[in-house]
Image (cartoon, rainbow, N blue to C red; front, side, top):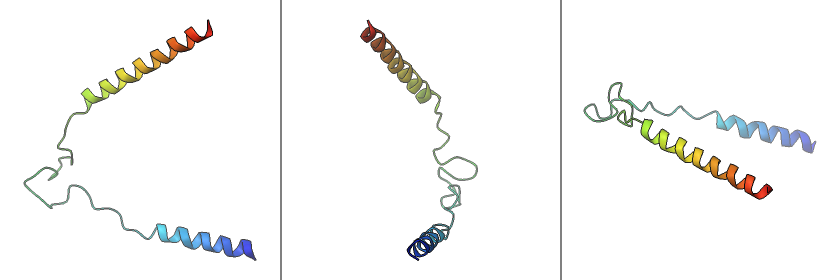
Length: 75
């Protein structure tokens, strides 16, 4: 009986999660002259290429450091 009540409580709890509406689209006509109007992304179309290369370089440097440290500890 306790398992049945627990199962019913869990099902009722998860049914409430699906009752929420979807969030509004970021390009709604709230401010038709500013950023985010029309087909422009909310960020204003800022490029992400430079930041991506910085993150890749930092990751490669960190990985190289870990490899060098693991090789020196084995010797």
